[in-house]
Length: 608
Image 1: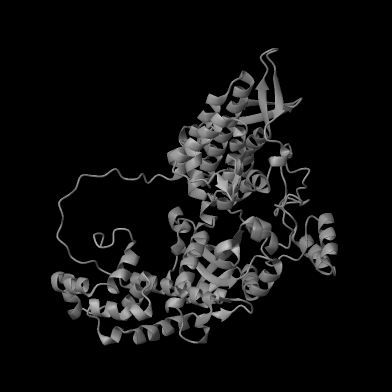
Image 2 (image 1 turned 30 degrees about the horizontal axis):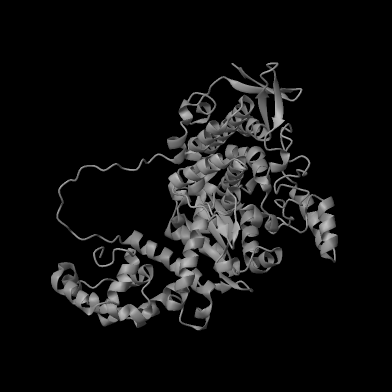
């Protein structure tokens, strides 16, 4: 296959092969024993259907496959589509009443628990919603809803896997409040019932269910009935608390309590009674940004911040502020570009439509994902060395040394938040994050003349974002309650978007139902991924055995990729005095860090 089609993927090569040169097919039949044995060992109908859909062979090209593999007439397109109807009817998709389709949420949960029973009876069900653009030019958007079952003892990689997430709703549209109210009407009722009962019975087995909600901030503000707290013009800056824009950068405040759900509902009803958008916006400015009633009855201590979006938002801000140091410094700018080139990270072109773009404009326009930001953070020293080499004065060198300390602190906090074995309290988390946030705003400069210290603005309060506030004040509460928050992040939901987009491209090739609903892409997408889950159930009950082959000579061991997670590989938490006490299996240390502010100067002391 590699010799025939070296530049294509395996799936594309298979499609090209079965629709390609008849001489190639004849050669395979005559010379490869496995193909000759197929005529005597016909595969099961479900196995063939799973193969057809996973390799994405359209109906009109299926006869080539039947001829190649000597398949009998009982495995023709007619029988495959008939079987596809039967599987689809097992979990019937319903219209959302708008532009999408959904599975009954509680029915789907019971089906999953019956097919993949967990080893415990106490479960956390993570409900997530996320939107994405599915066409060029961001003209068409699509929203999906997923749920995951999490429990103690579940491996972190399994919790983040796309096979652990279940897509139950999909519709064409954005995350506007009106769209969510219309499309999620039945979902809202099911979730609120699950919150009220807290139990789910499956085949006479009763499970204790704890629902949690995980969304990015753009979706969460709409679900909670708030105005965009992340907008620069917004007055109230957080979904979880009532922090005012003037208090967002004040990190001397020790805590921010959660909003009260009952008062939010009462204010939301008053806001919805307003007749004009202007009156609602004025009401929201005077009442903590509330413009409507929250859609779900989930309390704020069960609305978990998405660490995926939180990390990416803070990391992007730190990177942009770092690159801004290269303004009017051509050598430093070239040094940064060389580091991006070394990391194989492509930036947008310097010229666009006849206009020359600066480095910071190119970085802001880059589509970096989490792996890119992790690579930047892992190679942070390469960027910071560029700053050190460009320092011409002692004051500038001291200032950029503090920038290096800021990045090291964030690397330590990120490693601590992503390490599964971490166990700490909210107070301990804030003892680590508040010094980081203060250093983000100010830096301490030692003046050579009089050998004293003073504070100068580093990035300033205007550069503090709502995600940084959430990272400092609210992440610790959920880490104390649930442990590592990586398992709650929407990695699988984001992966599901890419699969949905790929399925959207193939939707016109015969992968959906053959009735009148087949033209609706959302209907096809939803049923396609349910069938993939059904095939996994079949493989679980009857695993497919691989062909018996002769044992090959043992090859010398290759350099294998380390199985250590990013936190362990990048930042040795057990060797760091501030983090070793939070790792499970270590004796708690007796020291703590006390911070006192006198006349604008931060004094840090270690107390045994």
